[in-house]
Amino acid sequence: MKAHRIALIANTDFGLYNYRLGIIRALIASGCKVGIICPAGQYAGELRKEGVEHHRLNIDRKGTNPISELRTLWQLYRMLKKERFDLVHTFTIKPNIYGSLAARAAGTPVVINSVTGLGYVFIEAGGAKRWLLRKLVTNLYRFAFSFSSRVTFQNKDDFELFQQYRIVDSHKGTFMSGGSGVDTDKFSSAGINLDRVRALYRELGIAGNQPGIVVTLISRLLWDKGIAEFVKAARVLKPKYPAALFLLVGPIDTGNPAAVPRQYVEQAEREGLIKYLGERTDIAEILHISSAVTLPSYREGTPRTLLEAMSMEKPIITTDTAGCREVVEEGRNGLLVPVKDHVALACAIERLIDNEELRIKMGKHGREKVLREFDERIVVGQTLKLYEELLGGKA
Image (tube, rainbow, N blue to C red):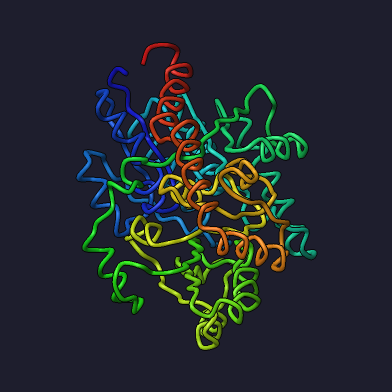
């Protein structure tokens, strides 16, 4: 690509570093000037080391104060007006909405929005408050996306839902398989850090190199990720498999309306049902010691943790719902269970606990599927092609 100025807008630097680093590196390697617009967190410095310009955005992803939200929109407009980017690519709800509006006002030629999941507002019917919130978000989406060049979706269910709500026209929406992709070199048996593995064994009180059965769930701690179903499944299975470890990994997202209280997690630990490891950076090593990985979510875009597990040759168990079912070939690389059914989840876990040969076979098929469909290089290639198309073949 030629030296265009590209901006990526997100509500956290974590998301840009962990999910968009591949496209950032590819753009920089092609000679583009890349700017990131997001709050400053622990990953902003790492992104600057990659060669990006960081423009700090004050955005509260949970905030609802109209004055504060208008300040964010105004700040974003001024950034885009000053920097004069050729293309702006936004991720998650507020950046999608505010980014489209600000970019239009600033005269940015190309605006791409990526719907990476529907989140709390769209997952369940809820009460009057959630209905009003969904109505507001739907109308804001519809208005903002009228100014977009393209809106990308990670699964066909989300795309169809947005058409059903008349949020986006079919000619403007694009289904891009693969989600954010996965680094299949990093998430491989050859890519793990053995010192980290040994440290993990010590932390978990595991002697030697045989951890036994380890069932892992990696996610933000939200009810709609299936945390309660995971704990209930552990309660069903623990009496029969007392030595099995049920690992829960991820941050407690206190600002989210669907956040799981810390007390719930602590109580499950006191009962001996799970081991909570918190937010971690040694995900590849945690997957390495896992026997199976589950995500009993109510709805996803494309579940990154399951792709990472597949890349590590681990069988997966997830729900038969939007985003999740796309990564599973039933009985081949994993198992599907109904949403909110902890008994079915426990049965699926038990099936894998009792059959090591099946776990190994599913793990190998999972790795093959990731390499074929979800490798980060495939997703980066799709994204660059879209950029080139929308920049008028001048990239």
